[in-house]
Image (cartoon, rainbow, N blue to C red; front, side, top):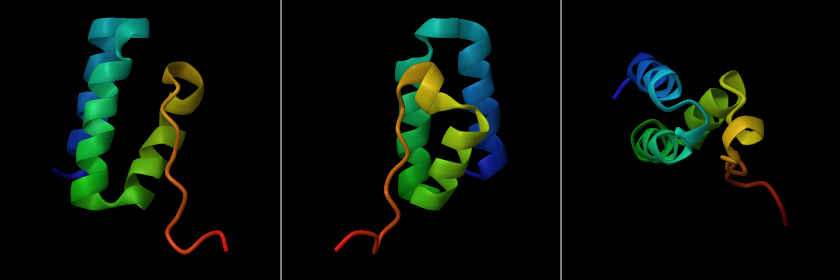
Length: 66
């Protein structure tokens, strides 16, 4: 999967399901995390404002915390 593929899939889910797109988007974000890493997933979450719209929270960066 590429970042552009993920963008298209997220936008497609939003267009198709609107406010009910959360589960479909969550699957895409999970795939992005496993194939492209948490940073890319977090960037997409920010780009599409998924935390506010669909309650999909970004992952804390590795190494943060005590």
